[in-house]
Amino acid sequence: MTATEQRPLGSGFTATTAAADVLAHVDLTGKTALVTGGYSGLGLETTRALLDAGARVIVPARSASTAREAIPDVKKVTLIDGMDLADLDAVARVAEKITAETDRIDMLIAAAGVMATPQRPVGPGWDYQLSVNHLGHFALTARLFPLLALSGARVIVYSSAGHHASDIRWGDPHFLTGYDKWAAYGQSKTANVLFAIHLDRLGRDGGVRAFALHPGKIITGLQRQLPVSEQVALGWIDEAGNVIGTDFKTPAQGAATGLWAATSPLLEGRGGLYLEDCDVASFATAESMMDDGGVQPYAIDAVSAERLWQLSSAMTAVNIPN
Image (cartoon, rainbow, N blue to C red):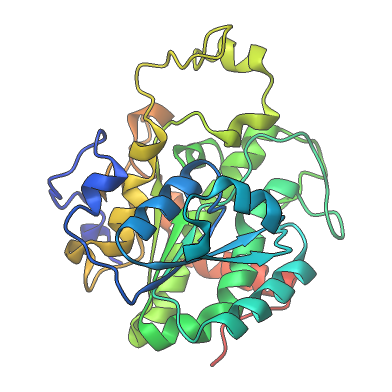
């Protein structure tokens, strides 16, 4: 990716485009997609749309029985039980199960995540949000890389405009000196973008391309850790739980950008880009507010992306095989 590539392409789609619109003329018969979080929220919308387009969909789930109840046409989905992105041993076991189930992955869509959770250190004291949103997906993708390389896959990493809230806290990524749930969320979302940037750099010669994206503002299960009173104060919902934010998308609209990233011919030969509203995003400026959109320059900095990759590999003891 070069700075000149991080600019809108004029896709013809908008913020109101829905998942079905993106895939209206796309035939994914014979393609295999893996969707983390594919049984709830935007992940479920993604699974539904991929199935309708003819793809085979693999969904790793913490509980296969819970996922089975949520997914329509569940017989067409390959459920992999035991996924916990905060547990690297569980991630390794799931990667082994996936490898036994398929010989290729054409699309890996990392849609699972958490947001603004209370402090909850995991493993050796790692920040929970960084672990679930970034490190778990890093380890899973690296372990599955041979399957991605066989098909020249696209890897789609759900980030957020929340990345505006924090760069990587290189001196204290696990908030040992004081926890801020929104800064922790922001750091994890910046990590998602940097992960996609360096994955694309490492994979592009073999045809593996990676993108990060902001799906938009959507009320889903992602907000389950936020008190209703806080969501009301933020102007997202009313006291009855109805969405009142004027710039909020529906779940079907929120899933559209990820599906566009996974399938659009406009992105052939491209990668390492941050997307929003079914197009490549512009750069944010120093004066930009989070709701103004765009990507912060620190989130697509190649030096930071390589630095984070090295840190993540050291923490997870996983790397892409040579």
